[in-house]
Image 1 (cartoon, rainbow, N blue to C red):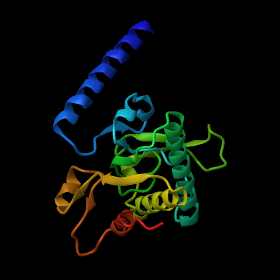
Image 2 (image 1 turned 135 degrees about the vertical axis):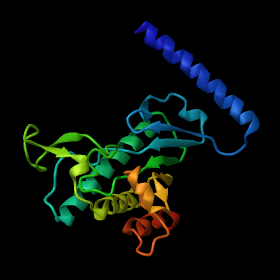
Image 3 (image 1 turned 30 degrees about the horizontal axis):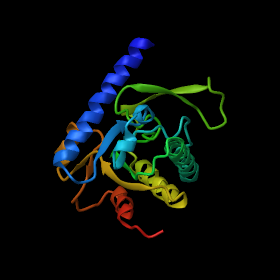
Image 4 (image 1 turned 180 degrees about the horizontal axis):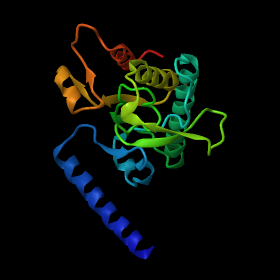
Length: 214
C-alpha cells in the first residue's frame, strides 16, 4: 500500500506540473479524458476546466425481447439515469462544478450494443431478462448480432432525454467514429456514416445536442 501511495503521489505531481506548463502557453479551456471506469480515480479535476469521460458505460445487463422498443427504451432510460446519477454524486462529493464532456462515445450498429458498449468482438454472458436470476444467463457473441441501427439511436435519444430532465451539465459529445467513406466499415465496427443519400437515424438525434433550450 505504501508503494502504491508513493506511485500515486508521484503521478499526481507529474500531472499537476503538466497542467501548469500547459496553462503557461495555452489560455483556452483545459480538460482531461478519463475512461468510464476510471474517472473517479482522477485526483486533479479541480485544476481543470472540463471533466472528460470516454463514455462506454454499460447501460443494461439483461436482454430485452426482440422488437420490444418500449422495453429497450425503458432499459436505456434507467441506464443513463444510473450513470449520470453516479457522475453527479461524484462531482458533489468533491465539490466539482465544471461542465462535463463525453470525450469519446459510440456504439456498434448491432443489436445488444448497449450491454458491453465497448465491445465489438468476443462474447458476454447476459441475463435473459430484467427479472431473471443473475445466474440465468445467455451467451451473446457480439459480432453475430444482427445489424440494428435503432438500438444505438434509442441509446442517444435516451441520453438526450435524461440529461434534459436532470439538467445535467453535459457540454457535448465527441463521437467515435464519424466518416463519409463506406469502405471504412471494413476496419471500424463503430462507424457512423455521414453525407449519405439515406441518412442514419442517429444523426438527427445527435443534432439535438446543439439545441441549448431546456
